[in-house]
Length: 118
Image (cartoon, rainbow, N blue to C red; front, side, top):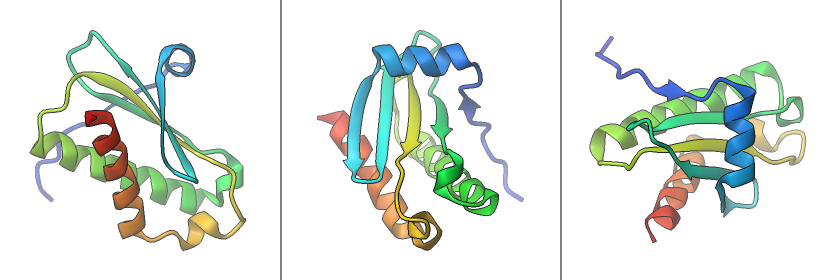
């Protein structure tokens, strides 16, 4: 086991509501929305919204794990300005997220960061 950097997460409902109301929405794909807002905490905080329609608990946990893994790598490799990020998974077919592969997921989140840099 390597030394993994702890990723700061959004925990309170008020953080998610503030982000939804005041944040910027980015649409990196037809199945994902990302809400972004600057913060004053000098760190990147992230959260995700995965309702039950996304799939079983196994599928939802896999998507959360992929989010954490990508964000840890991104924060370690580049200097990202302090912000709050909420990744929202939209309603799709029953099997869509179950059949989603890791490469497609990474490309989509990477597309979000490229749109954010513009």
